[in-house]
Length: 215
Image (cartoon, rainbow, N blue to C red; front, side, top):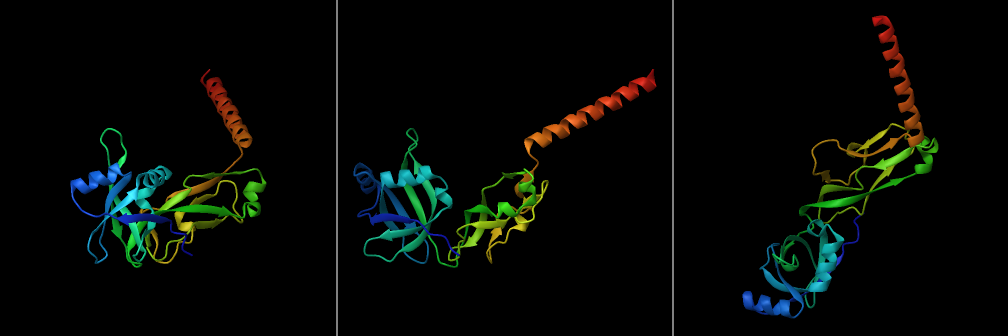
């Protein structure tokens, strides 16, 4: 099931070149261009405050947007570049790439863990340690999953959850070419401390025996 694609509102920018771009910035807008998708490039403006808020939310360059321009059909886009002021580090221009539904893109997809109550390891006091709460996948623009779900039923203390254990949407694959860890089910800290104490005592006993043999 595809997730909700956020809207990105823009307006057509009249005029091109540095003069039009400067005027857009004076009007509280960030100039940009939309290109690709077998259509001519189009100059646009996006409200500065709107763009800045989305940038602060993170993952802007890997988020698929539904570009809305009054009087035109909505189009799916992904940002390929955001230029920033060299001193103030504020956005001054952006490039948006149009995508077809069949286009392949890299996006970060959140991971959700379910059925913790059915995991024997958690019932025993084990702790689920999430290494990655999102995974970067290469997916089809028309079939982006809202999230990845992993069922913890039957998981014991010491179990490790890797990407190969998670069902991925058809056609999707991780951008990392190895079976990396998503989470693990570790023993409670009190039990780990007890184990460490036992190992330390055992080591002391071995050392004492060795010293006696040497004497």
